[in-house]
Image (spheres, rainbow, N blue to C red):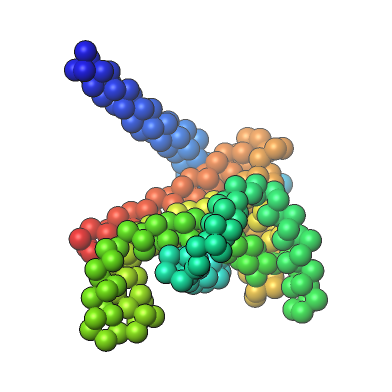
Length: 282
C-alpha cells in the first residue's frame, strides 16, 4: 500500500513538472511563431534600432522603448536593492520581536497589493512631488523608477531575509570572537555567505520591474521617444504593448507580439546571466 502511494505521488509530481515545462514551451512557440516573421518583414535593424514608432505610417522602431525599459529597470534597482537589503538585515539581525510581528505582515502585504493600486499611489503622490520639485508633468522616467523601486521591495526583502537567517549562527559568532563589530560581522561575513540567495531575490525583483505594466503606464508619460533626462516622459516595452494591442491589427499587431519577444529575450538573458554567475561561484 505504501509503495502504491509513493508511486502515485511520483506520477503526480512528474505530471505537474511536465505541465510547467509544456506551458513554457507553448508560450515560447506562440511568441516566436508570431513575432519573428514580423521582425523579418520589418527588418531586424529597423525594428531593434529604429528611433520612431509610427504604426500609421508603417514605421516600427522600438529602440527608444528598449532604452526606456533599461533605464527604468536600472533606476528601480538603484532605489530598491540597497533599501531592500538593508531592510532585510534589520529584519533578520536588529528588529525587536514585537516590532517584527508588525513589520513582517506589512511587508508581505506590500507584495499582495495590485499593480493598479501602486499606479494610483504613484499618480496621486509621487507624480505631484516630482512635478513640484523637478518641473515638467511629473510623469517621467524618475517617477516610474521610484514606483518600481517600491514595488520590488517585498520580493527582495523576503528572499534576502530568509537567506540571511539561513546562514549558520557560527559564522556570526566566529566573526565576533575574532574582534569584529556587529555591523562588520554582518556585512563582511553574513552577507557574503548569503550572497547567492540575495542575488536570486534581486533577479526576481528585476524580473518584476522589467515586466511591470499597469503601474508604469500610469506614471511614465507614455511618450515613444528617446529619454532626454530623468524628468522626460518615456514608454517601456510593456507599456507599448498594453496601450496599442486593443486596436492593433495586421503587421501592427504582429509588431507588438515581436516586442513581447524582445522582452522575453531580455528576461531570458537575465536568468542565464544569473545561472552563469551562480555556477562560477560554486
